[in-house]
Image 1 (cartoon, rainbow, N blue to C red):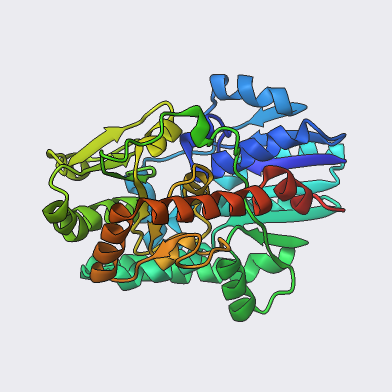
Image 2: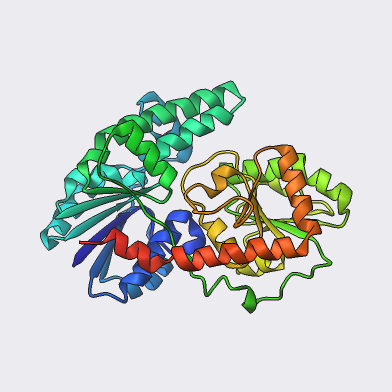
Length: 389
């Protein structure tokens, strides 16, 4: 089959974003098939990324559609009732390029992320797939409900309404619309009544997240870890919440415990959290090495959508996970068996203290989590489901 993937940026390195991680691993799976993939991205030209991605594609095309500053984009998006995530690209600039590519007569045209929907009418294809990943309108709806500041609440409510309007218009134009969380898929099915909505499990390169490759955490050195891109607002909010509300109570029982905040782009507010109990690393080359050394992995997200691949990565490493319910949406786990779910401050504190005091319980939760990832979450399965004839 001939496949065209249309995506915002060249998907390398995979840790660049959640979207890059997914597309890069799907491309790697294509190497084991007879399918031919072309890739078109419409952000800034990236020579080094193209060099790596070209190993798994037939041809790569690029045209930079960014035409304004981010600040101006946000102002104009509000004035013109258009979501910021879509307004930052001048989509019409790609029309002539897509008309040329249309001559290739692709079997599948794969539209990755929400900003790609405006290209739907610019190219034909036997089957058009929209990979939204997360339901964006649901994300902003949830975010608006967590904001205490009036301006932020109004802005996020407007974004929710803008995205919902476009989702209602475009979902019906695709053969299938995929989400990585079954809760997102169910939300869309219930609210939009579309029959082409699908849920797909993400994968994990389980060989890269294997505890046997690393020094196992010293049981006498208690530590907790949270990972993610730290300028992503749900991650930042989670780190601040944990440090202000939960960690002080843990420190009372374990004065020497360390909380590691691991991930690129921490801002001044996150860096200011550092003290004798809090370590902010910024970007690290091997995130698995840090997870391996931790006693517990936490994910205290208060809002968000989609499946969190970082949860699967921590599960792959036999780590006991304490998480908010939203953090494990879309992942088939049982509370108290595969992960520990905490829904308020007292639960967070009590359940972390329980895990820290019970080595056998930590091992049991970690072992069960890895078995689930091994059985249910692979990039090969994801690739097959997406491009199934």
